[in-house]
Length: 137
Image (cartoon, rainbow, N blue to C red; front, side, top):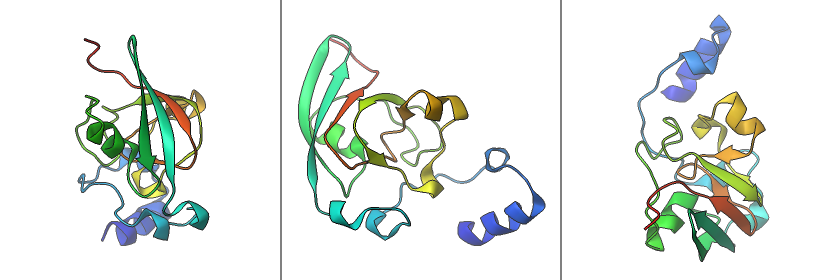
């Protein structure tokens, strides 16, 4: 229904940021989204996570959100909506590539300009370095 409704709202000329949606979670089959590189479908990358004075190196699968990899590794990262809408998990991507489905990209303009992503809705496409807020001790 949202895909239909978004097309109708676009006809009205309303910016997406003015339209609220239910948070239903992130895209499940990310490899079916336009723009997702087919070669990355089953890849696993190294993610260096900086959280305060701590640094971790973990595996992150290209088919699942970065937040899932963080949680699997026992890293306490902030999260709420798990769909890219609220921004609670906002983290700075220091280096690396990622894919974020357009339907889940709820970042503000400034976040996009200064390298921030929402790990709950971002999928790794290379080895990366990420600064994550949260518990430091």
